[in-house]
Every structure is written in C-alpha cells, then in structure tokens.
Length: 318
Image (cartoon, rainbow, N blue to C red; front, side, top):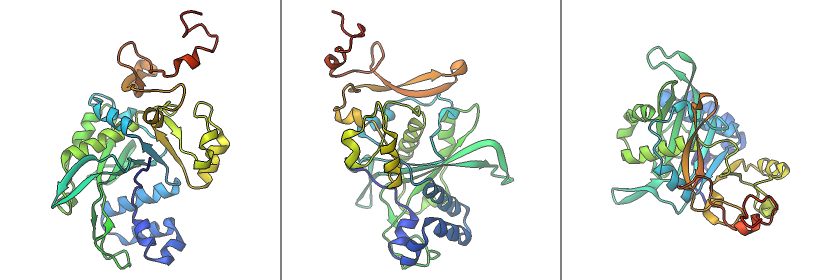
C-alpha cells in the first residue's frame, strides 16, 4: 500500500535550486527563519526543520485504523494523555483513502498527510514561555497548491504545496474537547486559498489525538523496515538490526494497523475495534487498545495454530 508523503518547503525549493539541495535542509531552514518576518511562517519552518533533524519519522496509518479512530469519542479524554515518541512526526494516509473529500471551484481535495510538532507553550500576550506547558503545532495537506512568496529566492509558481495549520495546546486539567474548541479558531491566513471545512479540521485533530493515545508498545505499531527485509522480520520478536538498517537508509517509521488491514500474520487482529483504557496511578492516563466488542480481547484468527502450544488455555479439550 502506498502512502502520501508530507510535502515540505525544502523539497519544493531543492528541486529548483541545486545549491539549496547541496546545503541541506538544516542550513535552508535556518536561513528561511532569519528572513521571515511573520511568526506563523517562522513556526512553519521551525516545525519542518525539527522534523528533518529527527530524520523525518512517520506513521503509515492504514484505512481500518483511520475508520476506527474516527469513530472514537475522545471528548472527555485528558489532553495530557496525548503524547508521541518524538517531538516531530508525520502521519501519512494511504493514497487511495480520500479522507474528508470535499470540492472547491471544480477541484477535489482530501486529507493526505499531517505533520505534528511539539513546542514550548508561549503566553499570547507577554510572549513569554509558560513553564512546563507544551503545544502541538499541526500542519496538514489536502492537496492545495499555491504561491509561496518571494522570499524563497527561487522561480516560484502556483504549483507549490500549501498546508493548513492548527494549534493544539496541552494544558493540565483540560480535555481533548477543550483543545478542539481552542483549535477551532481560524488564523487570518484561513481566509486565503482553499477554505478548509471545519469537519476536515475535526478529523485532523481526531486522528492526531488518537495516534497520540497509542501505547509505545502497541500491537498495531510495527516498525517499517526495508522491503528486502520484510519476509524475515517478525513484529512479535523484532530484529533490532533490521530496524537500524532501515533507519540508516532514512526509513524511520511505523505501520499503524498493517495486520488489521492485510490479515496475514498469525496470530493477528481482525475485525477488532479501538477502545479507551484508563491505566497508571489513579487510572488517570488514557490509552487506545484494540479489542472485540463483547467480552474484550482481540479476535485471534488461525486459532488452531495457537492451540498446538500445550498451554491448556485455548483448547477446551486439553
């Protein structure tokens, strides 16, 4: 299955200027931030710079997981439960999954990819850092193209990628619903270009929140390794060397729900759905796990292969 790449400013410019490509993304973004007067543009370039610094990590989010995540009611979940394994992460959606498709001026748009980046929170009035508070800046691509501006020092056109952004503050004592309401406020830039329907913004924030509620050792999170290594990679007993080899080749990612989609691994989940669990001291942390509706626990296929193990737990005849 093919997934959409998150489009960056650096990729766009580097294709047009060999010197930018040679200098690399770090130097490019440092220069850009020194030239941009607008705070929003600076945040955008800082977010992409942080992502490149982290080796562009990503989640490939499979269709069944997307469907399950969008059905969840996360409104009462403490926003402090949302966390990611790194400070910058792209969520890549399948090329054939047209999530939230809408039309504008005879053209179709849909959600393709999302970049989630964590920053220290700043008081909007004093512009001072708020100790201990974090904010996720979320940038998402719906396939919009446009004019980036003159400060790129390139021959710009109207085919460059344009992303939309929202702020997602992590404030102790607040719920995801509180943050959704805060994020619903449009920035002045929202009045230009393609108008993004509010239900698309809602789907973006829902997917980001749900991915941030997955446990780090979740069964639906499988390292994305090199194609030639897939046959000998066992997600239940992952080979660290194969993962490191993929990282050295620039493949720092995870497949979210691949087993749910293809139904080939034995044992594996099938037709399971996402559910919220409260864990930790005082059961204050909320996580997402996949289980069946009645009785709990995952659906296990090829059960007969598991019953060959003499545990006496799965075979009633033993």
